[in-house]
Length: 169
Image 1: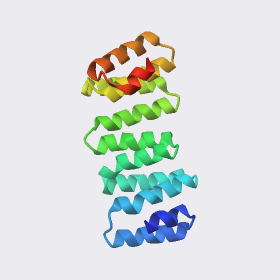
Image 2: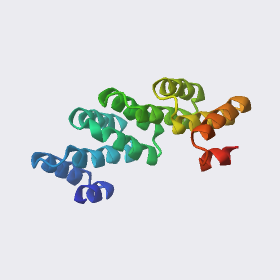
Image 3: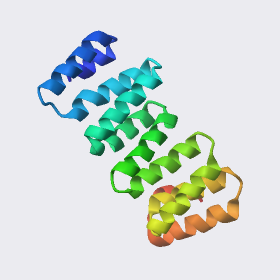
């Protein structure tokens, strides 16, 4: 908590010092590196952020999805997409990381790439409600109403009470 408070307050040197101390004491890598990555992102130091991301991935691959969600929340879909990709490679090719990549592509205005990734998700898990909903949103946003309706029908057949899907109709 102290690291997060110091990193968020602009005390960069103190935050780095504390990160090193936590790591030396054997504190979880995630606790030491996540705040540092977010500090670099807030300050626009993407190169340093990426170096810390790679260190985190090498030491604590299970922390990568957490970091991707934090970056997404911070409005950095570009970095979140790359972290999801890295996490996908490190964590056994998890479908949730692919969904994260697709979500980020869509947020970055790359609908075609998002749909390509969603086809890979479908190949791995044909009954993934989140993938079907995202595909429906992408098709609807692009004016492809028949494809959007097809995705929504599949989604509602899988999950008839899916409120988001019903609202998108």
